[in-house]
Image (cartoon, rainbow, N blue to C red):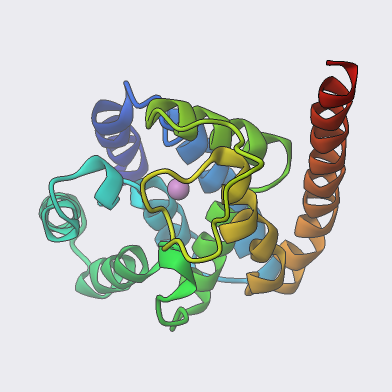
Length: 210
Ligand code: NI
């Protein structure tokens, strides 16, 4: 029952999001987290609830990270009686974001699983689609071949969607926590590289024709 309540809460909170953090992202991350949790024999309830709630506190969708975490904590206190479960979920949600690779590693198997599930959804064909959807929602350009991004901070203003592949997406394969996720990441990673090759090929061909 708490799962259904969490689904409705998330749908209300993220229902209109167009930046790649919509309900279908949550749906995929939840299903992937359950798949990994069964492989790893992790706590299914903690994995499923943390996956469902993982983006509610996202800085991109709240006034501050604290305000977002508080929202999740209030909801959990109201709907979950087991303090240990609440504690585990809060710890997962507060440390799982990519944050330019600067966050500390996960301390529980369940945290590793939910983080892997979220990262798998950031790569491959869907990851590519989400990157351009997010870029569009922030008014970013797709690609600026003349610009040097090497000194830019993670997610700083002015980054392009293509640059996001290099600052994050192509790094995720080697950051997977579990073996199964690492395995699943291989083909998604290869597809992104193939996509970039084709992207540059078409871009350069347009230059030559001009
Ligand atoms: Ni997410």
